[in-house]
Image 1: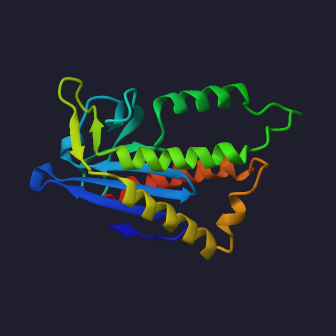
Image 2 (image 1 turned 120 degrees about the vertical axis):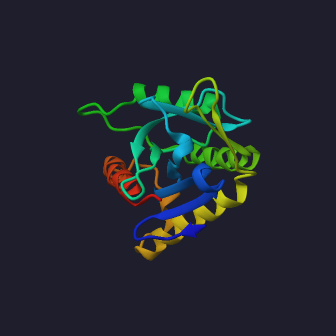
Length: 204
């Protein structure tokens, strides 16, 4: 189910029934940015950091935080900024982000539009090839949710984000052409933090 709350887009899907019911929610506040929340008794874990990965593409996974739904009291897991990219790409971008971390008096490197286009293409291919979500709630028995191809859901989600930008008076086609890093990046991180809290409060 695709929802369009104020200033963001939300995509939700339910797996299982009764005590095994698990809800996966994707929410985004900008182009290419997506948080993931999973709520349900099957995700209860003693771990503070819980890794997840999309199969059969990813091998290393990405860490999420344990939480609790204030609405139902069910266990919840939150992953801010889910990377739907190859492991090698994630590692490369993380290394560059560290090397090019903000420094006083140093102007940020301009955005490479060709590389941005390549990353969008890789994300689309990644979504098409992914068909399962593995969550390591317990190392000896991970939870596996059979999502099927994520190509169409991610396409709808991205279009929703672009429509949301247009509704706020911003042309997403022009945003795609901006080569100077936007100062809103830190603001977006803060906004994701607030959205994260909202997720936990309102999740089923």
